[in-house]
Amino acid sequence: MRAARHALLPLLLACCLSCSAGGVVAEPVAGAPGVGDRLFPHAGNGGYDVTHYGLDLSYEPSSGRLSGTAAVTATATQDLGRFNLDLSGLTVGSVTVGGHPAAFSRSGDELTVRPDKPLDRGEQFTATVAYAGVPRTLTDPDGSREGWLRTSDGAVALGEPVGAMAWFPCNNHPSDKAAYDLTVSVPGGLTAVSNGELAGTSQTGGRSVFHWRTSRPMATYLATLAIGHFDVSRSTTPAGLPLYTAVDPRSNDPATAAALARIPEILDWESGLFGPYPFASSGAIVAHLGSDQGGYALETQNRPFFPGDGDPPAVPLSTLVHELSHQWVGDSVTPRSWQDIWLNEGFATYTAWLWDAHEGGDTVDQSAAAAFAETAAWAFPPASPPTAADLFAAPVYRRGALVLYELRRTLGDAEFLRLLRAWPAEHRYGNASTADFTAFCAKFTGRDLTPVFRTWLYGAAKPAHL
Ligand code: TRP
Ligand code: ZN
Image (cartoon, rainbow, N blue to C red; front, side, top):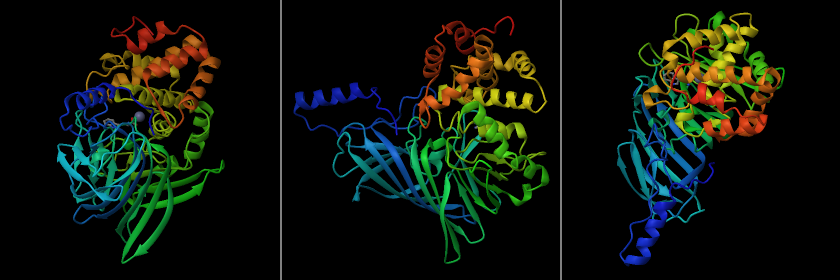
């Protein structure tokens, strides 16, 4: 589910020219091995647009082995003699395209598939990959761990920014969002939790099978799967939204329960800021990862993930507010490329400032002053993290939030709050870039906001004062 891109056009033309001019046997037209993300050049692939992932998996916690098939349904956006999927580690047993065996090869994190006959531009196809192995934990440029994280009784998959490829073959870039059906078999007694809604469960041969369905478009980095012992609670908010919350029994203390009990209230309050909640269910996942493996929360679609082994409390309210706000800014409206990440983190940080003030804690002015005073927040402009290691650095979060703070001072409360509500509607279930945001602000307000953005979003220098 992605708008057509034009970056591949020159490649396509060059190939057509050589075909007609030379009379040589042409190499099949290849999809690019990356979408051209400045910070993650190998992430994603060109030449197709995924509409659906059908993952049918089985996991064995004792050996750590994951096995199954991934049926990737996509539309070719160019003629394709071959194309890539992103997959890190694991062993591929076979690949079919349209039910016919396809040749494939591996190189680094790229799985190259060559269908038995080339795909035509516009053609819909399903590539089915059978694979197995012990999935990898990936270490990011900033040292954080993602991908597949083993726990004492299972595993948790976390995928920001590129960890999805550690557990399923995919077009691993936020610009290509898709629907998902995930069916996973685990030993009886364990629970498998994922995004979306639980479409069915069954028991066979001492195993439990969980079918999770995500109908709304989801970026690969937001896909999760948590397997283990969980206390599951299902309820419906006063507004009628189904909640599914899975908490590691070791984290299921009164403090965690009290925080999670406020999800309906937080979603209501955030709906006031950002408009209607974009998805068909919510909830949370709280799991123990072990001290060496994580320690960060993640806005996995529908139900955010929280590390349950922090000391104390497991789920701070401001973090819960932050991750739930990402359902609008990040999950429904997803960055077009990784350098647009401040559209997630600046907005979520600002939301938590508003919440703190609403709860009688620090005022927004106090939070903004603290951010302004933080030396690390001025390392680079939020619009342009210099390297992949800077994706989750202070400027993205705190200086990103200061962009919104300054926008509010410029526009005044009423117009700013109207804009904050209109923005998620403008790109609901899609993607947006920093340029999309600044253009939207100009159009929505009819004002020249260039000075605000020049200073707070793009400027290298720290302004003299707030
Ligand atoms: N996106 C997460 C959040 O702010 C945080 C996150 C994901 C993160 N991966 C990370 C933070 C790696 C630090 C390092 O909600
Ligand atoms: Zn965040």
